[in-house]
Each structure stands twice: as structure tokens, then as C-alpha cells.
Length: 101
Image (tube, rainbow, N blue to C red; front, side, top):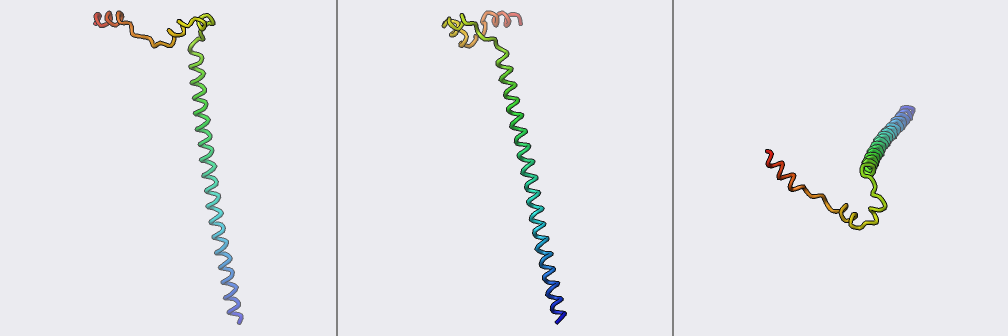
């Protein structure tokens, strides 16, 4: 009888150790997944912030590069129309350049 009790208690001990090892494995996988998720979110946040900063720098550079027109120019609709028209190539200058070659 004592042998069967020992066998039963050793089987229970093995089952507890097996359940504990499964729980530890699941816990380890969960911790690993949490670390990977945190790292991914951190990198994503860094990338978004870097893009926003680059966009802000570009906007500031473009805004500062062209002076604002004067109030008189804004009242003059012909000047506004001329500012919105694309600049054309100077045909005379181009002809002169081709003659010089």
C-alpha cells in the first residue's frame, strides 16, 4: 500500500511540475510578446515624430523663403494675376545662348 501511495504522490508531483512548467512557458511567451509590442510601438512613435518634424521644417523653410506681397500689391488685381501666372522662358535669351554655342 505504501508503494501505491508513493507512486500516486510522485505522479501528482510530476503533474504539478508539468503544469508549472507550462505556466512558466506561457508567461515567458507573454512577456516576450509584450516587449516586442512595446518596442514596435516605440519605433512607430519615433518615426511619426520624425516625419512630423521634417514636415514642419519644410513648411517653415518654404514659408520663410518668399516674402509676403505688400498691401498695395494685394489690392492690385493685375499684379495678383501676374503673380499666379507661370514664368515663361526668355526666347531672346535662349536664342542668344544657342548662337553662342
